[in-house]
Length: 135
Image (cartoon, rainbow, N blue to C red; front, side, top):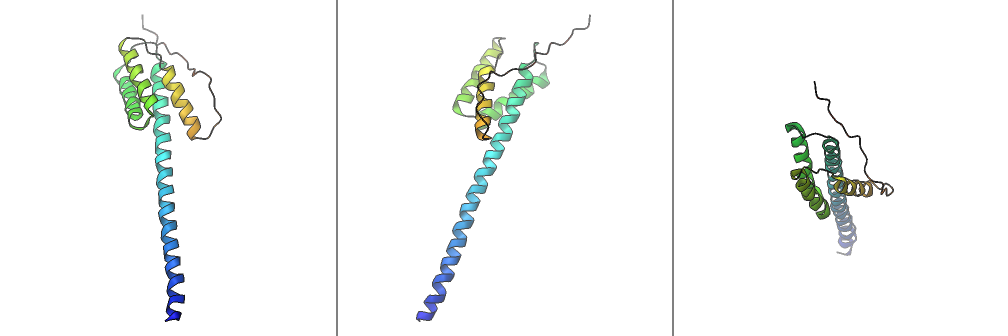
């Protein structure tokens, strides 16, 4: 009887340890995948908003679609502050005063933190594109 316990206890301990390691690694893997997806989508939102906001003229439908996609990504994966800034940006667009620097700066700060990069509080800069009108 004692011989059975000396065999069963180490085997049970081994199985339990393997199961706990599997559960732990699965949770870490899922957490990393979620983090990677969030980073990817926030980078995309940052890029789309930066691109659209560099235009000095009214958006065409493809640019409006890009901006809408970026706002949807922020609504899905952004922080509460980023969602509020996106809402304010939309209000500025509706009043013809698009300058999404606050939102871009917050997205940039959040991404730099997620990517473990040094803080950079420098204001977001970009080239302003003005399309030539054919005369």
